[in-house]
Length: 193
Image 1 (cartoon, rainbow, N blue to C red):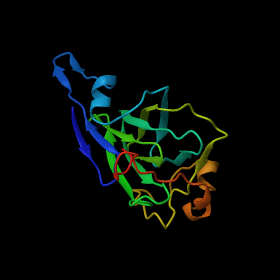
Image 2 (cartoon, rainbow, N blue to C red):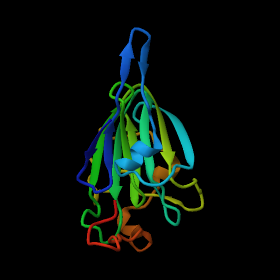
Image 3 (cartoon, rainbow, N blue to C red):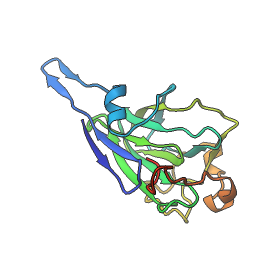
Image 4 (cartoon, rainbow, N blue to C red):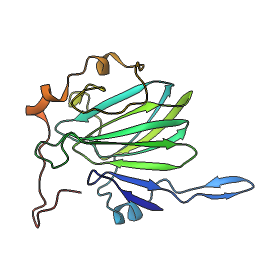
């Protein structure tokens, strides 16, 4: 497994080792000790899967009191996956990264707590699976407008298929007082990872 840092501290891209032969392929999609060894802390408590059609945007989603770290991968199809730092006071506040994840490239992305997450389906359909570090709580979740001009995300779609919740989500500036706060590690001056 190869691990790549991104411009957002704590957001990691993982390229998995795929073993292929005439029968097909095999890969480990999660191994607690190995993942903790590369900086993906904690344990996962919930697995989710979605199936979406071309042009769908899901996100940008966050939980307030019980923020979720997410380990995302694509089982079928291709997506443009996005993480946005929404931690007030962070040096990378409002910055985002986008990564192509597909069933063919076997890449994963880890989005730590304190970041908004969303994705756009590039293929005809896509099946996305992700592990979460906290349980989903619909009363704790909120959405940020997918095309908030203050974020400037370069989505590969202009008129996506959206849920009503995502279509009517507020801009980040409207949520500023309820966003998570950036914290510095207690033993040093480096941001949380």
